[in-house]
Length: 143
Image 1 (cartoon, rainbow, N blue to C red):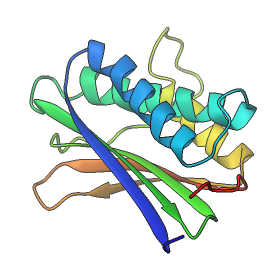
Image 2: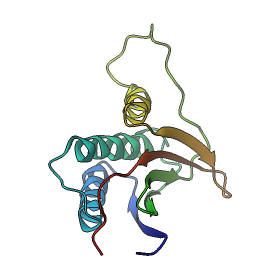
Image 3: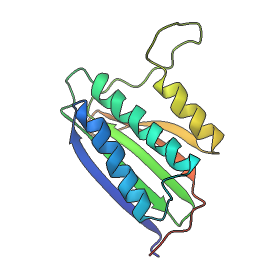
Image 4: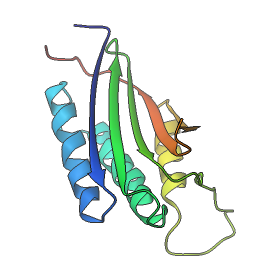
């Protein structure tokens, strides 16, 4: 196998794209050898759903598309990121704030930590941002 595998898809910033992003990630990770009936796969589906939902809901129409990127490095680390062109970075809500939404980043950060990974937000050259997680990969990759 090569040192890494990569895949990406760009979708319109519309609510229907959240499910499309989830299906895309599911398909790619299955091709890379991840069984879909594992807790790890469930966690990845939740993470991509939350990141894509944020890209749709919180860019206020200023990012007509978002891109989902996957990178598997040396069968050791999976990176999953969502990039949009809106400059506003996600904000962590105080734990005292009571509301029905706005907990996506807390969920993602918690899942990443639980799996031994990390959540990172990086600016893009065009003024947007990439929100991504890096997780250890313990699934054998099929060639």
